[in-house]
Image (cartoon, rainbow, N blue to C red; front, side):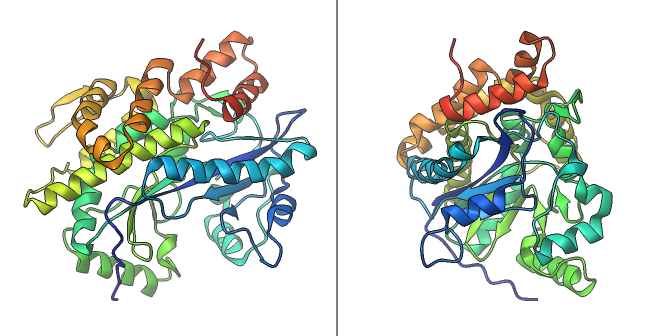
Length: 379
């Protein structure tokens, strides 16, 4: 099977942000996506170009166009968010984004009436119906196909950093799971989800995809749901590691970190360097550690087994990427990662909200709704 990669302008950026729809009074998820999508649809079009449906009717997704800077992408998301709010506010529906809803039951949620979703649920059964999860995806443009797999491998070294910073799913079914990102370990239960294979050649990826088609595992490349994957049609590398992020500021910060990492890798390839990569068993262990411990995770840095607290390594990464961020005009957004380090990742803020309100998970949902509207509280 031949997979055509359509090169992009180097380091263009796009984002996809999944938003939960919740009843303002109860904090429970509400299945009103079809009504919202109908009302936001511009006249003469069948669907809004940047506000999309998802697997569950309690979810809408907003996406950007192809952007040059992270600031442009953030402004694009903010515009779509405002369009959604013009419909949801009068309905008494609030928005939030986190890896999971703290207490709504998965078995009460309605699936979008589309053939591809019905097929997914029919095949995956209990695990498919459990996918009451939300994420953020970031696309970064690459100017040559031969860069895709080396950049993917190098980006896996920083998957635990991105996962720890974005971790926002400590609660599931009204219980504290003990994990910072329960979503990360749930999502990988789906076929073709989880960590990617580390192919050396494009032909090996093509062979894998061909096998998946021949054996009926997938019908379309997009059904490969890896944490990081090529997006050949868009000419991008797609970072899918992150839990849903509660604030636009955090989305922009994670997008900036991703853009800077990919641009740095691409430049190093242009200069003839070989990019560092971890053995698959270290990559797998790092994912579990970041999901379990979040920003307290001790991550494995290299094949020699050196380890370090993930937040300490993040600080060094931010310092190293400062010149890259300046060149990409995302220095302010990259510094936003320091805000996450200072005030805590979402899983930490959610647990703090629960403690402050005698364990109330409704208060946790209220805090997520407030952050979506007003940003991270600085007091």
